[in-house]
Image 1 (tube, rainbow, N blue to C red):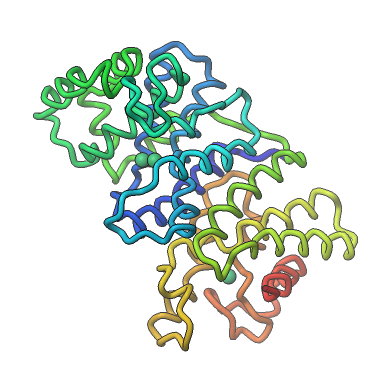
Image 2 (cartoon, rainbow, N blue to C red; image 1 turned 135 degrees about the vertical axis):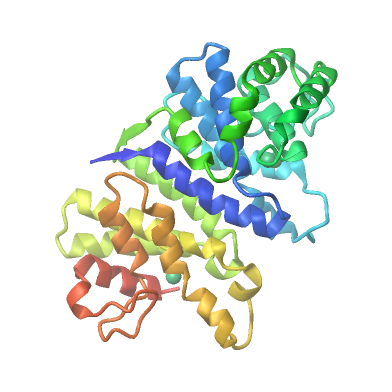
Length: 352
Ligand SMILES: [Fe+2]
Ligand SMILES: [Fe+2]
Ligand SMILES: [Fe+2]
């Protein structure tokens, strides 16, 4: 079985966007925009398509460890983010994905500056140019909110990039940014078309469903999902393990065991859209709060529905709160619609 990693990480990007929106009040699709800009800049600089894929993927996932960091330190919304921590953990988390090139430092150094005043104190030339591309896209989009940026003020933006070249931005990255950031690019970053733009810019990244790919996907998604809340910590990995063992016990093929394992890793992806106060509330949930919780399987479904060849895995993942008598959620399916893998996932996910 082949998996479209570019589409899968796009889903992870959507999930991360929900976390970032909640924790930082960040604008939507930030990661997606910097992935697009990074892909365009990397091509401009002459990187091959495998490298473009790695650079853009790391750009999409550059802040994957925000939820992890926030959980360990619990800062308020207005507190500065500890840059070092999320850079280090973010690098460690993406490292497990089955990239076709090396990605050393691509996430770790995304807040470095050419003048060495970034979190790790590296100067231009001391961190990879690949991450300098991600860094400039990140900084410009974070500051100027490119999805709303008026085309009439593009010259001012370009002038500011020029002014910070050699201090904030490396020369090669700044030149690449100036080359790709024209009016058409700006238009294509708007929220209503940014998904199409992303699909057009990302190289197809197809992998066999090998152990390495499975462990990579599970590794990063479990981190992101589980670190959202102490209540779900390690939940995804445990459920993956149980699902694999159950599938083996029932005589599933190796590939079907892998599907169960992946479905388990992803089953609570939609929980990233549930506010953390609700997930962690001690006491009884109000009817409104429970209504929000009950949406998470549907959100899981929506996050996974655009991955080619993933339909089966998505159904197993997103029906894990359905019950035989139709009293489950979010769809209220009954026994006739719930096949064995779905029923197994429900049982596995009940265990905490
Ligand atoms: Fe960051
Ligand atoms: Fe960012
Ligand atoms: Fe769930």
